[in-house]
Length: 116
Image (tube, rainbow, N blue to C red):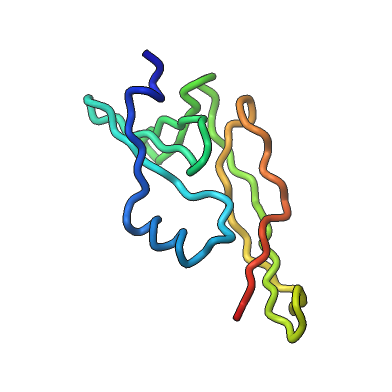
């Protein structure tokens, strides 16, 4: 049975609140734990699962290819100007994890943040 069918992924309360307050975010993690206590993570709406390793420092590896999970910086333009889709040029930067062998690299330009 594939590991994806053995695990039940959930978003914890802190990330659920973050997702509600920040709909522009490119990556919202969901977590699961197997019967032996091993933790796993995947992005909401994604199918690739990462095994969380906590030896000297926390790292993740892809459960498909066993490759190391890396991150890419995604820039979210901040629309805080007086006109629609205008802003001061500021950006919020987010590190988005992905498996370079099993997933597409996240685009540099993420969803804009609209300041009300």
